[in-house]
Image (cartoon, rainbow, N blue to C red; front, side, top):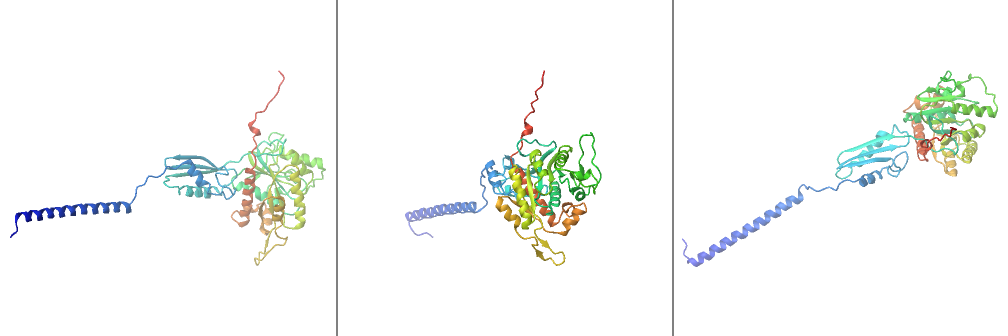
Length: 410
C-alpha cells in the first residue's frame, strides 16, 4: 500500500514514463542500425555502366592472332562491332586461309568478350576472305588467279618440289582454292608427286583444262609428253612453253597458284619475273653451306627484279633415326636462320629429313594428304599459313576496280 504523498507519486510516474520513452528511442535506433547493417552486408543491386564499342575494342586489343602475331584491332580483322544494350556481336575477318583456326579463334574471342562487366549474349563470327595483292609493275594479273607464289632454290636436290606440293596441299587443307604449276620444263616432277596420269583436255581448241588431284588444279609439261621423253629445247622455246602453261590454262578461281621453279637463276626465272605476275617468292634450302651459297643467289635475284621474298624454308634440318630415335644435324645446323638474319627475311619453318616424306611423294600422295594428322603435315600447314599471312600483309591489287577504256573509230 502506498504511504507517500501525492506529489511524490506524480514525480515517480513522470520518471517512469520518461524512462519508457528513452527505451523506446534507443530500441528504435538500434533496430535502424541493424537494418542498415543487413542492407550493407547483404546482396547489393548496383547500376552497371553500359558497354560501348570502345570497351569491345579494348578487349580485342588484348588478344593476339596466333598466325599474324598482332591483335585483332591493329590487324584490322575486327569488323562490324555491334552493341545492343548489353549484347555484343563482332565479326573476325581473316585475310588468310585458316580452316583449322576458325573455331579456336571464335572460342577465344567469345571467352574474352564474356569477361566484360554486365555483358549479356556474345556472338562471334569468324571467316576468311582472300584477295589479290600487288605484283610487279606493268604485269597484268592472270584471269582466274588471285596470287602467284614462286617456290625457288638456287641448287637442285634440296627438296624444293616436295616442299612446293606439300605447301599447295596445306593451303588447300586450310580452305583455299589452290593451283600447282610445274615450271620445271626440263625435269617435271609434279605429275608423279600428285599421282596424275593422262593428258589435259582442250574444250575450245585454244586453252587447256587443268588436271586435278587431291583438291588441286595442276598443270605441267609432264602432262603433254611421255615420261621418258627428254626436253631438248633452247632457252626461247622453254620460256615460250612456260608462258603458254601459265596463260593458256583455264585456271578456275584460284586463290594461290604455286609455281614450282627449276633450280638456278636462268631463263625460266627471268621470264617469270618479267612476264608473270608474282606476288612473292619462297626460298627452299638445306642447312648445308654449299646449298646456302646458291640459295642466297636465288634470293638476290628476286630482290633485283622486284619480287618480294616471303620467307625461307629449311629442309632436311634434322635427321631422326627410325631405329633408335637418335637425332643428328647431318647437313649442318642453323643455316636457314643465319641466312634469314643476314637478309632480314623470315625463316618460315624447318622440316626434318624423314624417309616418309620421300616415300609419300613418290607414291603420289604427299605427306599433307598421306598423313594429315602427323607432325610433319602440321609443320607444312604452319608454314603455309605464314606464307598466306605474309601475302595478306602486302598491298592489295585494285586494278580490277578500274574500268577498261576502249577507243573506237565511229
